[in-house]
Length: 260
Ligand SMILES: [Zn+2]
Image (cartoon, rainbow, N blue to C red):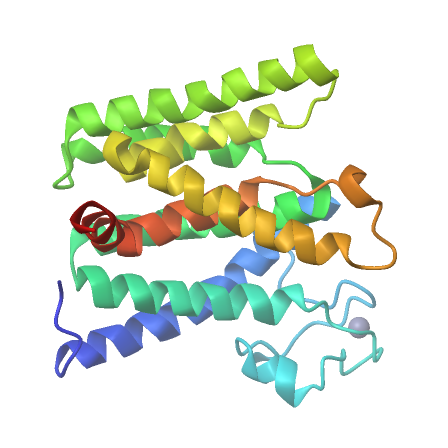
């Protein structure tokens, strides 16, 4: 593992700042996908009143706090998603920097973190995992053995088995309960997630995803406005979470489980 002490501390800090700034961009991607706007233009503005943001209203997380979660112009509330995405992006960039150091592997995983963050927050809002994200992610993930120290067979089989398991689950649900509980988006997403974690770590990834989804679903169902078992929960974000946890600590976890 990469030693997180000085001077690598500088890299970790730079990664954190980069992650926070990228988070700001991911917010733009999520919001503009949900409302069907172009990602490149116009510049950053308040979605409610169109007020164009000055530089100090555009600082990740900090601006949200300084502005008191309100637009300076129309006093409309800023969605909690904005600081959440920025903070998550920053923390993940930092954790991956500590784990992988200033390597190509870190840079490649940063690209995946961006895709998965944007896809997850779109899924949370709209129950859609856009093809424009899942297909390129799958292509990129399946090509990682070309430039990363990962095994071809692990990558290929992880991808096929990951997507295959979810395809079978979807079909089973459809036949037995007449319920389309798993979207095809989840299956396409598994093509890339399975490739990234590899076949050996795939069961751990799915277990972590299922456990985190269960924890959130139980917490959610206890809310007074929940509709019990009929409450729909998008699974994409949990699959991404499971994969991220597996990439960060999967090997250590598996070693402990096997050593036990
Ligand atoms: Zn406004």
